[in-house]
Image (tube, rainbow, N blue to C red; front, side, top):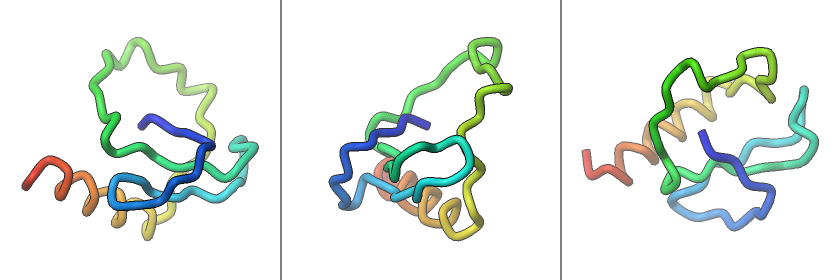
Length: 68
């Protein structure tokens, strides 16, 4: 998921607090959603894992953004 450290809030962002390898508070940019071939993902560089509450918020905002 695309991240930014430019905190804006709103209906298309999910706040992720600084932790693990995430050096600053960041937001997931739901409106920047894209697909990647899995071969392009370096799983050794994962910044953090979302909590269940963050996942629920992300799933809800994706559904709203996509009109589902």
